[in-house]
Every structure is written in structure tokens, then in C-alpha cells.
Image 1 (cartoon, one colour):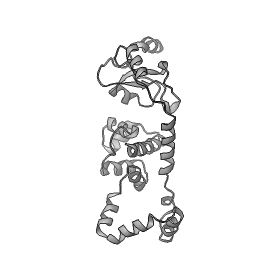
Image 2: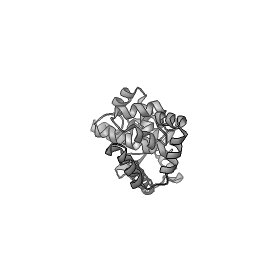
Image 3: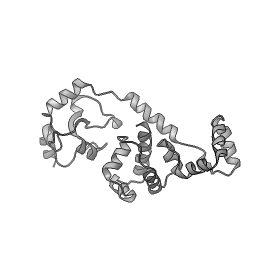
Image 4: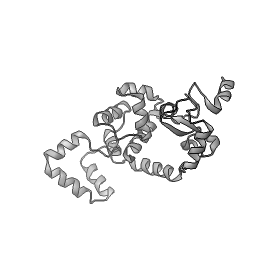
Amino acid sequence: MQNTQLLGAKIRELRRRESNTQRDLAARVQIAVSYLDKIERGYCAPPSDAVISALAGALSADRDEFFALAGRVCPDINILLVRSPLLVQLVRLGAQWSDEQVRLVLRQNGVPESKLHYRGQNIKSDWEDRQDRREAITRDIKSAVFRMDNAECVYCSSQRLLQVDHIQPVCLGGTNDLDNLVTCCDRCNSKKGNRTSPPPLVFGRFRAAVEAQG
């Protein structure tokens, strides 16, 4: 689901730049907050064309770039390609040109400069770099974390859809040390996201510390 991860990274970047919460953006696009969270984290297939267009509009983003990051072609472009076989041949020809040759032709035909510098590759390389540096959680570590938490979510005590959660997210420098890992259900993990602060209710081994802070 790499395409969703690329698109999700861009959505998260723009949303945070505008200081919007996931709830705010989801309300504007009219989708569930949990679904937006999955899109941002790359935990689902790329959203529909309508959702991609709505997200781009809500974030004042380049719709073409959003579709490219999702591995899709904009619906209006797709219609043009279907209607004109010559355009298909033009695309095939352009694919053989260098980036500079393509930019020159587009400039000559009045394409705005902002459209000539696609930023998707930068996002992709950043994401791949993080993936390369991310150490996988081994089965032994996962089993040890589940034993420490009695196979219950430390945030709500659920025993369903359990996974291992980083207290300090990997994107913020978190490691796979046992002190940084807890048992967490899918629902609480989505709520917590990449924040370091836990949800309001905490059970398990961190309950006393959280209650002392409160």
C-alpha cells in the first residue's frame, strides 16, 4: 500500500501546516476520522477519486499531485485520454523525454511554473528512508510485551485486535526497547496516532504514573 503511504504523508504534512486536526479535516471532507487516520498512516487502499479530490480541495493542494501520489490518473484526464487516442500517443512519447524536455514543452504551452516541479519524489524518498531505518518488532519482543501487559490493551483493557504500540513514535525517534512498547488495541492505537501522550483512560503498567500526573 505504498501509494497510500505517499498520499497519506502529504495529507498529514499539509494538514499540520495549516494547524488542522484530523477531526477538522474529516468534517470538511465528510469522511470518518478513523478513515482519515488510516489514510494518513497508509493502513488502507488508496481512497476513491471523490475523496482524493475532496482532500485536495480542503487542503488547497494540487489535485494532480494527490492523484499521482495515489497512483491514479485524474478522472478528467482519464476521460480526455479515452476520447483522444492521439493524446495517448503524446503521453507515450513524453515518457521517453527527459524531465527538462517535458518542462520545456509545457512552459511553451503556458503551463504554470508551480505545475512543473512535482514534489512527490521527495516525499517518496523521505518515506523510504524512514522505512529503511525502522527496525522490525520481532515475534519474541511482541510476545514479551503481551506478557508484561497480560495480553490487554494498556489504554482500555480490551483483548481484541491487539498490537504493539510505540509510546515514543518511531518518526519521533522512538525505539523498540521494551520500555517504549506497550500492548494496544487497534482502536486506541488509531486514537493515539503519532502523539506521545496516552488517551485519557490508561490501565496496565502505566496507570499509576498517569493517575499521579492527573
